[in-house]
Image: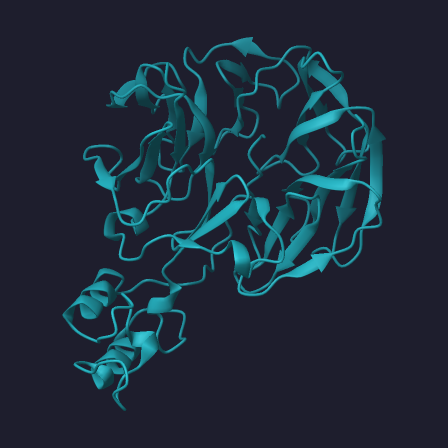
Length: 385
């Protein structure tokens, strides 16, 4: 029987144009990353955790990385941005082969760290409320039995209480507009995570920020959306899905992926699921999960490999926007071949050694694209392992 793994992420119209292919950037990184997360309020700041428990930070969208050195002997496993201040980050570090860890906090984008609390648990998922300062949830294992429980903190991690004695490995989904409502699988909390009941009917995997906001479920019977707080569900894609990774960016677009031992595929929609089409341009086979940092920058993870989908090379004049300036750069080199005095390698967007209509098509697909954001986004969190 085939072992199927699926991915479910929400992104913008980057999927619609798909002008670039995925690139293996493993050798360009200081270490293979297992998880990566963007700062929700400081453009270009990214934190990443490597597979050997090191913490790295970039301030330029991942072009260069600097290792962070929190004063811990343990391995960094998880990270989350807390909605207490612009610069507040949390990391969870554990001693090797021990179910014991410490929560560390930085209020200056990782320049300095101080311990918040230590617990005798193995943490699987750490996440902070998008709306309520100091409200945290953490999925943990207490022993080798694999039993999981959900812990809650209302004071930034100094004190924790168990709110679910038995919890699934499903992601924690904060309702996008209702601060007191949280989902884990088919369970829902209407009091900021203090108590839980069975209320959604389906396993909630993600959400969007439309009005009314949407909740998304992907399971063996297909991909569904609810616009009435999980009271009813509408099918978007009738494929057998078993999603373990969820992230979103835009209001209308999502990608869902299928993978087994012999095949891999991604499908996209930019209109809320009315049309779902295959994304076939350079998809690396065997991706484990995808992390969306912006509508033009996506990381994919596959064992010890890290892949990148990046549309910023089309910004030929480095203005952080695709506009007439980029068209002028491409026009000057148009019709030239590699080795010609007019040839510009940056303008050769498809890397075929010639500046021609194909490069112009790529530029037109991205016309008006911005490579930074000015509006504050809700903080994200790393997916569970």
